[in-house]
Amino acid sequence: MTVGNVFFAIAALICVLGAIGTVASKSPIRSAVSLLINIVGIAALFLLLNAQFLAAIQLIVYAGAVVVLFVFVIMLLGADAADPAAARSPIARAIGGIAFAVVGLSAAHLVSRILTPTVFQQVSEEHGSVKAVGESLFSSEIVPFELTTVLLIVAVVGAIGVARSKHVVKQPKKIESASARMFHGPLMARDAQRPLSKGGQA
Amino acid sequence: MNALGYTVEHYLLLSGALFTIGAIGFLVRRNILVQLMCIELMLNAVNLTLVAYNRVHTGDMNGQVFAFFIIAVAAAEAAVGLAIVLSFYRLKSTVESDEADELRH
Image (tube, rainbow over the protein chains, first blue to last red):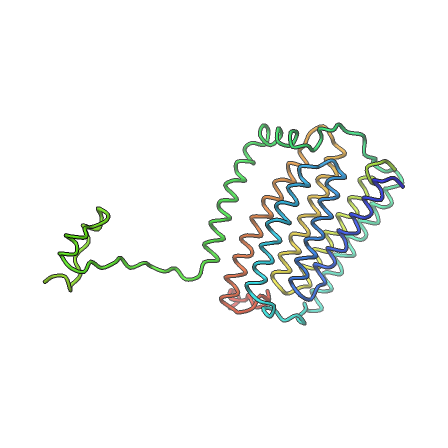
């Protein structure tokens, strides 16, 4: 047992416990905290795989933004937004069980392959650094990288548009009288085009 | 066994387990918020696979760059998904996905 093995075992345990907690918790806020634990475990595994940059991004984006967003929405909707006792029908649970069995069999197949393992080779310090990932992002992957900015802007605008409540049409402020227009003056040129309100005809 | 954790198969096994837990959670739970969290779990599992394979094929950084894009897509998905949940809650006063049956009639 090397230090790396122990580190992997601890991080993997954290990941699995966090994932189970996310799925099994009755209260959504506990699910969110379990998701945070899972994300921290994944970031630790990224460090182990020489992906320092991605580990930092993982913590910043997931732990810093996504989980906080989840917690905000849970707090906004309140704890009684869903019936905690409600569960899926037996059919859905059966489908879930079958999916679990399929992946379990695949996993068993993988374990059998460990007899001839694909061992990680030594790699340079550069692998996974900000420099290496950045060079790749800004040279060969520049088009998808720029498209990501479009995606994020569209997502932000879409989120605002979907989450906003009713669209309120602002009524233009009525101009009281001709003298008010004369002395206070239209603040903008387009206000001069506006008709006077009926009360101001005198 | 080397100093960098186990072999790539161990990472794949862990990733498959995490993905399965997320998929089962998505199927079993009815709370839309928890279902969205399960989607995040599955995306994380996929990211782990990509990074593990990039550690095997060390010639380029494609795996990690792909994982980077997946993280960006996951963040966008969470933002839009939670906005839809808020909108849905205004409509139905609940966050249970079975209540989203407006298109059925």
